[in-house]
Image 1 (tube, rainbow, N blue to C red):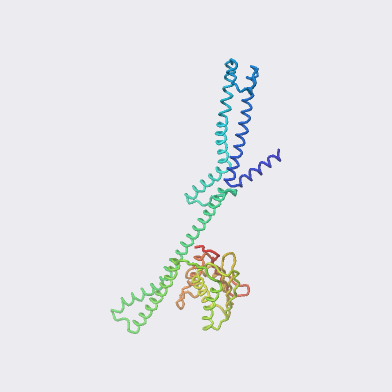
Image 2 (cartoon, helix red, strand yellow):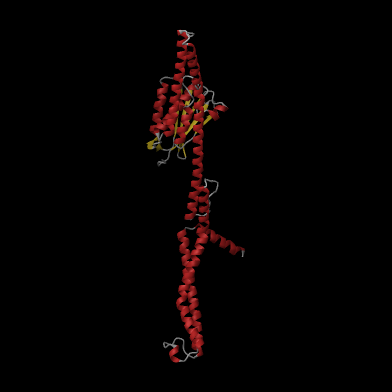
Length: 395
């Protein structure tokens, strides 16, 4: 019995893995065979009862002349012959109807009921914005593929929600940084303005002091102007549209070399490019990648001693660009916070508001990649910017 149960279980799993069309064809074939067998058995049964009646009256059952014309039949014999003929004629119809009902019920129960219930339950959870329910149906048939697609959609919705929350958090940080950074210059401007309004009409402020205060106010206004420009840059990134085109990676390397050559012309710093890209071409937005490289090089130039390495790699449809310097590297706090808006050890100095790495992070994420900060094992900082790029456009 254990062997039989094991074989039946294997057969059930095999049928479960087959496509709906194949299983339906199998069920229909079995139903037809069953109807034929039952009809034959019924016909034999009816023929046997008719044979008893013919034998009773000593008449050959194969006679071409109906028995009613040869002898006077008893009532019970008439009923038997009539019933046998009726059953023989209509049994195939009855068996066919029963086969259709049984086959459709079995097919629904074994192939459709469970995945449909799973999909309905998944739809209920999604409608309630509950993405914790996994839509898993272990079958390779069409409904199993639909359940798998639903589960992928659920996972994608989770990722989208996380991205939305991340964007909202980023916007909150921007708003907080804006409010924080703008408060100081506004306070300074307000203080000097109040002083001028109060004391200048009384003649208590000399022309020299007035000019000094106006110069300070102007410097704060310039700072606010520069700050507003940085805010505009970040807002423009949020509205920026990624436009990937099929291009050769060698052309991308040449564009990076042009940026590097421009830097070499003005700085006495060794900059090396290592091209480890395995593919010849792919879909990517060249302007986005070059903007990130430009920002990262500018940042590396500020902290390197005398050397910068640029490494281009390709893995699993993703371009990785590593920029490594031989400076002091990132502190633990900088690794976790340097890509946050307006974080910089030099923020506010020389017009620098610490948004370069924030812009790089936003551009990488919009291009389907990531942005990470680390320290190199050989010393110095190493920044990795990745960008999705495969053989066909994802956008």
